[in-house]
Length: 640
Image 1 (spheres, one colour):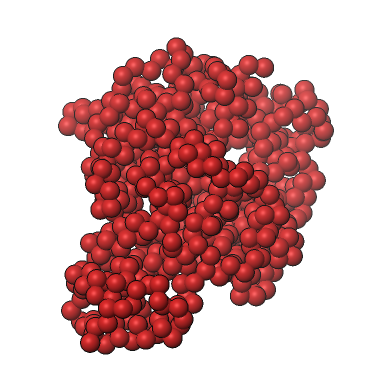
Image 2: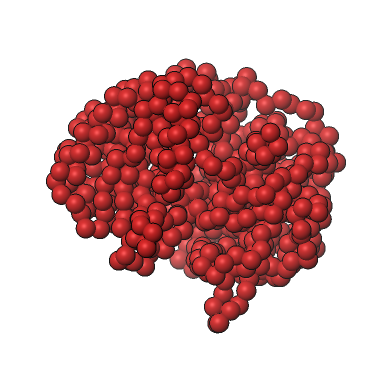
């Protein structure tokens, strides 16, 4: 017999819920499930569709589901009291939705309280929500299916209307645009309920069920809950990296040395670190630098008239940062984002028998030279990727070694640079003594010891004259700081540039092939992106490569329509020369480097004067693009 009195309000204990689950299992034929089964059970038992789905999912995967598993602080409370101050969204919600929340400052103390307070969430769940690393990132719900689910509960939420509101009312923010279609202020879902549904949907293969269950979640949420859920789903291109306040609060809450935590973050995701702490794992074994435990390398600060000498000035190359790991008869390489790049640069594997060490980790850059009538010329990043892809025989790959971080079981990052430099020279000399590889040459980075500012200028000019990108200034006594922009390295470049992401393209069909003729570009600001301007007239080579990357990564939604890309640009002054330009909005994913003839500021808005495309940064993740502070720095440099 199917009971009809199990309204959610009368399920008050685990026993009630256990009885409900048992009866649903008795009346459900798991061998002949179809979407109508979920709706039938939801109507018969007067239960929310997502709860029925969770119960059926537990049967299918032999899991035990209890009421306690779904009991925690509400998602609304987390959004209002934790995420809103953490993401600095109180003013945004007041401006867009008319919601007047008290201003809560994002402090270390508030985050520490949240991490330690018993609110029904595990530590891993708490951190994953802050970091945007929940199952909603991998459950197969992107913008298109999110909008399909939203349209099930609000017929006005068509793609055209959402885009209209995004461009006209919410300043280009897609999460804010979809939230405007939600009528109520707060929902009734717990956070564990939502996370459980996300975990289940990540394993669901039937799109119809997935969209229907997701629509049920949206129906039970308020505006800010939908906003933050959309930000989670949209994390691929609307993600804020962890803040220093969270690192400090986590360190204090669990009595973890701050430097140890920073090392762990360079090797593992913050959610994984939270899981280790939650399970009382010994953290020291996970912070050890080991071959084939990828990590984020040390980065250089921008030069700010460093006046302490002596220093080492080393050539800056326009290539791809590559960390080579060797252990016994195994060798591979990783990018600065900890991604395995061995498949991209298979020539690295040919160094296995040339490196005179059993185990080693090298930090360096892979670039290439091509011989011309004027002598050897270094390829830029775009040309490098093209040469590797096409196997151009006239190009010679070079691996330039910057540093030695691990050698025969010994970690060297704490040694002063001048000592690591001697180790580097000995190791590279040993590699070259074993013979040259025909497809890849290993070289030590050009390095000059300078005692004063005049010597530094001469060294820098020498690097520029020999077609390098600039110089890296290194402090002799400085250690190697994993995953940080360090005060022990400074970069000197002939001209300030910005790394921006492409948010729109103007396509051109030419000789039967598609290429990109123009782009709209943006930088990070708060949680989203600010569109700064457009660049037109890209050359055939760059435009064709951009088209390959865009189509290959599926960055244009299947239902995309031509639109005017200019309204979303923040400041359209006379220097931006923005005309009516129609194209496609795309997911921010591709990074390019640009410069300009100048930059104009109007209040807190900036316009680049005659921005110029330089090259594609295929080695750079969209999370690393320039932010608003970088634009301000660019402005100050240009007008100093």
